[in-house]
Each structure stands twice: as C-alpha cells, then as structure tokens.
Image 1 (tube, one colour):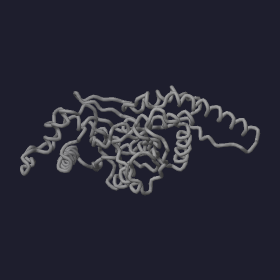
Image 2 (cartoon, rainbow, N blue to C red; image 1 turned 45 degrees about the vertical axis):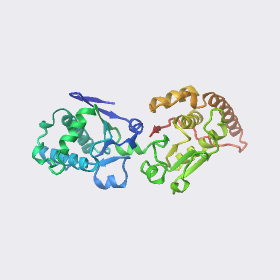
Image 3 (cartoon, one colour; image 1 turned 135 degrees about the horizontal axis):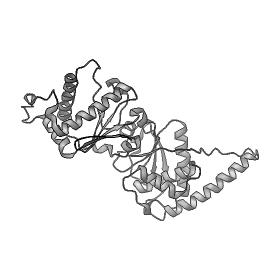
Image 4 (cartoon, rainbow, N blue to C red; image 1 turned 60 degrees about the vertical axis):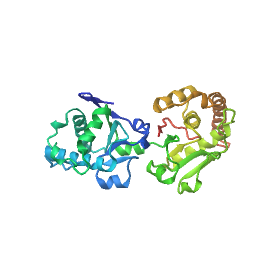
Length: 328
C-alpha cells in the first residue's frame, strides 16, 4: 500500500476491504472516474461520477472539468456527510490510474491552496444562493479531510468480494442490497422485516433469538452451506443476523469450516483485522464456536477417511485457501 503526501493531506492506495469497511451509507465522497456508461452499469454505493477527461485536454481544461464537477456536486448534495476519507476508484487501465493520481493531487491542492488551481475563478460564484459552491466544497475539505483513498484494483477489485458482515445501518430492501451487489442474505426469523422487500434476493432465515443462551450450532451449519453455495454460483452474501456481533459469529464459523487449519482464535483475529467496526467478543458465542469447530473438524476428518475408502459417502466441504470478507 503506497502513500504520498501533499501538505497535511495524505493519499493512500487501499484495498477493497478498506473501502468495504467504510460506512458507505453515511455518504462518504466516493468518486467513480470510469466513463459514464460504465458507471451506469454498476458502481459503489453513494459514488458519484466524474469521468476521466480526454488525454488531449490541456491542464487548464482538466482543472476546469474538476471545477465544474465540484460545483455540480455541491448543487446536488451540498457537502459530503462524511468527508474523510475521500475515495477515488476507476479500473485497471493505466490512463485511468494516472487520472486517479492526478485527481488525488488536485483534491489535496483544493484542501490546502485552491488558488493554485489555474481554473479557479471567484467570479463564477452562485449569486442566487449567496455563496460560492466551489469555496464551500474546498472549505469542507480543509476542515475535515485528512486522507484521499485510491482503490487498488478499481471497481473490479471491489466486486470480487463475496462475503459481507452487515449492520443495522444497511437498509434491508432489494434496491439497496442490489446496489451493493448482494444476491443472498442471512437473517433471523425473529427480526422485524418486510419480506416482500426482498424481491430477487435469496434469503436464509435462521430460527435463532438475540440472546446469549441461544444454541447456534444448527444455524452455523446451515449458514456455511448457504454461503458456500452462493460463492460457487458467483453470488455475494450479506450476514445480518440481528446485530453486527451476532452476525460475526456466522462469518467466523464459515472461516473455520472452510479454511484448513484455521482456529476460532485466528478467525477472530482475521475478522477484526478486516472489520474495524466494533465487534463485541462477548456476543459472538465464542465458547460455542470452539465446541462447534472441534465437532466440525472431527466430521470433516471422518468424511475424508470415508472418501479415501471409496464408500461413496463423500460430502464436498468447499475448503478454501483464502476467504475475503468485508463490512458495510
């Protein structure tokens, strides 16, 4: 992960997990620099489009497109609800990556010394509303933005993830879930949900309560099979079993079951390293997970022995050497 500095504003190349773990529904400033037709086919939640200008453009012409983008953004959205970090993503083409670097440098300049922008022109103020939208945007950056993130791997890298740890901030309806590319959802049958809102989304409803005494083993076993089936079919799963910590128990069960040699402790460390939102270890049924994982390892060993003997009782376990997990 490379890092550059421009005064007090830092640019970082980040992983898809880093972007997943932003609360995207809090409206970070996420800028999609692919061409408009690509943006319309699919984009990250809350992203706005600012296509890369033509390579034939002069520096002043490129800065003018940025100036117009900023004013258009302010007219539509006022200011970003959460302006730190600002996220930029494109695709894997060199010219797009070059534009991402150019844009991150210019945003840092807008934060620190906007008069250095050649296209800067106070005469274009929005007199009707009594303020300059460009100035308003720059002041927001100056007040709150410390980092510009550039997504390594672009939109395709973001789309490659398949398992998400959800939270109550994500609206449970087909429209919002589709924006995240979610095809499968795991919930509790005790959650108050408008089921007709899930059109086109496959749902696993687990019969579990939001209490510490709940017996989770049957739920975890069903969830692992559901997630693995979704992965094989190219789907993307969001686990929203009550709160974030209860959901984390499902993700940990999946990691332990499908990753050879992974203990519950290592699964916890892996999950918390990628999902830095608060997850309460006391709420993930940690002791139950240890017992369940030991039983699952025993069952897996028995299946492997049976398969080697040619009994025909082989059950595909779907062991994965790596598992990608994101949070939203």
